[in-house]
Each structure stands twice: as structure tokens, then as C-alpha cells.
Image 1 (cartoon, one colour):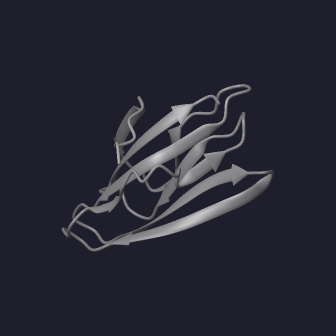
Image 2 (image 1 turned 90 degrees about the vertical axis):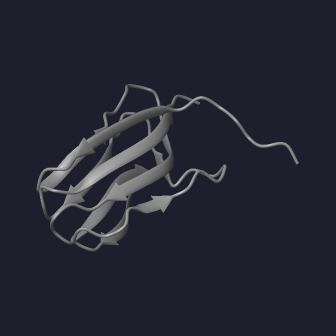
Length: 108
């Protein structure tokens, strides 16, 4: 079976405490998040991923240990988050040491 390949954009940031816009909304364009990597820093953290799909608020919680291993949601061909057009992909963090990397596409 041939592997699936398509271009994605990538964004990476050290999260601030509270809500962080990971992928900004774009008028008329949905966002699909294909892969997420959460890398802990000096503090344990529970990162809440937030997005709106079909007009309903959705959340997913990813917990990481202080100075522990990164957690990978691998690219599988099915997006982990489908954001309605005009809505952003947001991560809420309880600390200021966690890094999040997201691979995503915008548009159809």
C-alpha cells in the first residue's frame, strides 16, 4: 500500500499559561490538524486542545509529566481536529514551559 503524502504547514510555540491560539482562523477556510506533538518542560501540564466543529465546541486533554517524554499524536490520514471556517485551533496550558507543535492544513 502506498503511503499518503500531502503538504502541511507547521507551527511550533512554547505555550503561555491560559489560552494560546496555535493556528489562527481564516475567513471561509476550515483548519485540519493532522499531527500534534506536546513536549513538556520543567512542569507537569494538562494541555486542553480547543476547536469548533459543526458549530459545537470540542476539547481534547493531553497530559505530560514534568521533564518527561514528548507525546505524539501521529499523522494517520485522519485529522485530530476539524475547525469550522473562521474559527481557530487553540491550546490551553496551565504552565509556561510546555511546547506544542502542530501540523495542519487550511482550506478544503
